[in-house]
Length: 445
Image (tube, rainbow, N blue to C red; front, side, top):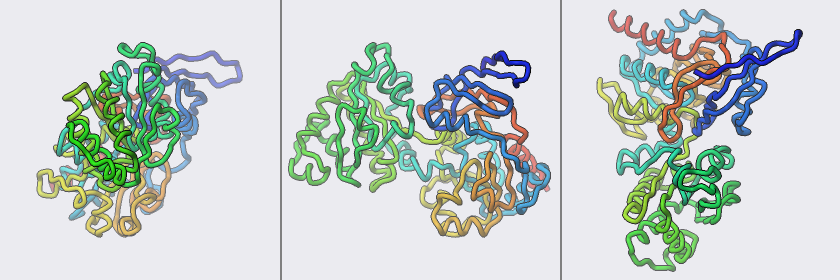
């Protein structure tokens, strides 16, 4: 547990509490070195947090709303659990979606519920790094921890990723700036390359920025694979397909081969453009090929605080990371058929449970329209378009700030959560355990 210290306060002041080494769950960096100063039910300072982490902690307020709504009207939590279980149990094709902003403990229970009712279970991975998950299944992954990057990485490549804005402490805590065991001078011992279709804020931190043609990531990666293998290429074709001359790619390959420990971080700029899982496979196989010359690894830059945990939990319980169908009593994996946005857009699901996600705000119009037509359950710490349209909506405590548990950093390392203060609302783990218990009872007749 976190070290907690009571700070001195004046006679008319509410006492301050300091929670040392708290964990920020805003993004996939999952920084676990944040010192929180807590006054009552408000965090007033978050030492070492980035701009996104500060916003996550300092803007956290306990909303004045019922813990449970049924049909938009306040109800007892136990009544909501009974109604939610009945909705899911009665469905012929139920869907469970979300899971990326909650603890692994809750994720495990959600997968259990999906198994009991024969549901489709899917995570937000299907709309971000889903192609990477497919590529991992197809060609494997050469990987490492962020600690190894910090201590060994002397060539850092960001491909279709913009950590300066999406993961502000990535540079300073893990990849570019820190002084490591084998890179004792920090940034001076590292070379940084950014590959993207536009000049992002991350490009300003790079030693080399390569701007490729939009939707041509696959061609660029295949060019590097060919150069890695010593295959001769036509300079005119390379420049036409990638937007950059062959000489530039040759220089980059020479730099990659000269590295002692190369790392490629890739983002949605690679996974969600033309090619999708083929792009990810090209990058993974390039990384594998590079190990014939030197040590090379690659890692996806994941967004949500525990989206990596969702992939891990669903994988270890079903064998697949997302988009899993359990209707036949055993898991089946087929992205495009069993992924939530597709299931809803085709009008197939007849009930749903949405956990820590807001598909009503970001799914396609056909998917949103169908979700609005079916009864569904929503669990979220705050009011969203999804909770407003739910048949049963639970307001739950926020993981990491009010709820303990475990999350997975983007490098698959589990990190414990150290809550700052209690919430008047139940945790989603309590709600999900109640739903699972009731579903079992209904199943026994």
